[in-house]
Structure formats: structure tokens, C-alpha cells
Image 1 (cartoon, rainbow, N blue to C red):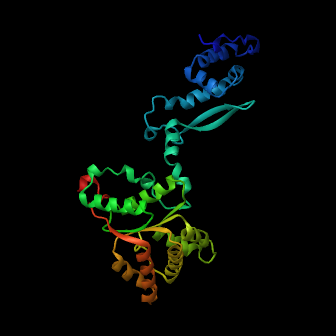
Image 2 (image 1 turned 90 degrees about the horizontal axis):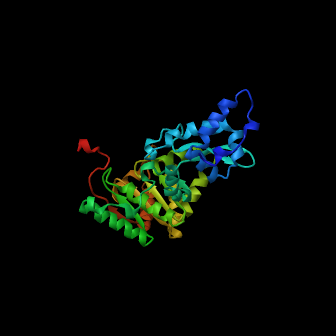
Length: 306
């Protein structure tokens, strides 16, 4: 019998349900999880008796967590969280992250450094030191090492190549590395950025994001060349690249085409052709970023379809 079960509270037990409450108290006071909870949160023993049914509900709520092996197998209503109890003079119900969720939060702590982030969930934990070179082909290894060298030297990179070869992955490695160092990156998916620009242009709300793009420690412009070209997009992009070029800010790009293909793409909009604006943008990209051809198999094709 635990120390808790020796507590003599007969005088406090209402005669109507004394037997039921005493039975529940004995069950809870001998539960190792309850005992651990009381000790961890410095909850007085009297609080257990005063809040028997709250503790019983807690016991039921955390039961699915026992024997849980991973966050992916979580059976709680809100994944990674369960009911918690703390004591602040009174017993307080809380929503508490489990150990797996806390580990995840710790692993993703660098994401708090992003000023703007269009990173997909699959790219949030990408780092250069997690690339398994033993499983990669020689062409991709060359690309990855060239990208990493650009990062180490604080230089920009223009990662281009076929769809699915890992360009965004390498760019995410660079921005996550920078964030892990405590600096402030911006990672924008350029077609999405252009959509936001169109929605917020006349209200002026776009200026805040554009300003962060201009002066952030590292700007990644992902999937350039996949956007719908407009005179407005070119104007805003040119202003961003101008400031980054003048201030020698590290800037990375990903795209399917090389400089010539991108230049041709940027020339045309719904109104016709604007060679001068396209040429000015490409000139700045050439100054800001070293071209790196990313070669390899399409990583987006399911293994069974290859």
C-alpha cells in the first residue's frame, strides 16, 4: 500500500457515497502514474481526495498513451497532446504535450527563426549533414557538395534541373542550416508569393513580406519560372534582387530551366514582350547566384512505379 493510501480521510467522506469514493481513492492512490503525477507537479495529497473524479478522468485520458511507440501511432484526439494536471493553489486542467511531441518541437525549433516560410512539412528537417551519400548517385553527390560549398562560403546558388531531382531539398538544407545557427532566413515558393502579391498589392500588405525578402540573411526563391509572369511580379522581384545585390545578401533560387530558359520565360506576359525587364532580372540573378545543375532520378515517383 502506498503512502497516499494510508492517509486517513474518513471524516471527510460524505456518508452517501463514502464506499464509492473510498474505493476510487484506493485505486487512484495506488496507481504509479497518479503517484508520479503528484510528485512531478507538487500536487498535495489532499487534492487527490478533493478532486477524485478529475483525477479519474485524467487517468482515463492518458490511458491510450501507455505503451505508445511513436507520434504516428498516437490515439489522442489532438495528436501529441493529452490532458494534464497542475497545481497553483487549486488543481488546474491543462493540455500537455507528450514526450514525442516535445521531441518534435525541439527538432523543429529552428523554424521559429524563419521570417517567412513556404517550406512543406517534408522539408522542415532537411540538413546537409543528414544527406546519406552512400545511397545517392555520383551526379547528385556532385550537386549536393557544390551546394554545400556555396553555403559554407556564404554564396548564392541557382539550383536547376529536371523536376523531382532534389533542388528544393538542397535549398531547404541551406535555409534550415542558417536557421539552426540562429539567423533569419526567408523561404518563398515563388508562384505562391506571386499569388499573395496579386491579392495584397492594392492594400499594400505585400510590402511587409517584400521588405523581409529584401534584407533577410538568406532568401530562397523556390520554383522560379513556374509562376505566371506579370509586369507587377517583375517589378517587385527586380526591386528585391536590386537590394540584395547591393548589400551582397546570400540568395538562392531553384528552377527547372537554366538561365537562358528562365530569361525567355520572364520576357512574356499577357501584355506582350518585355525584353529589358527580363534581362535586368537575369543579370542580377547571375551576379547573386552560382548555377548548379542538380541531376538524379525523380524522387517524386513512387518506388513501385519506377
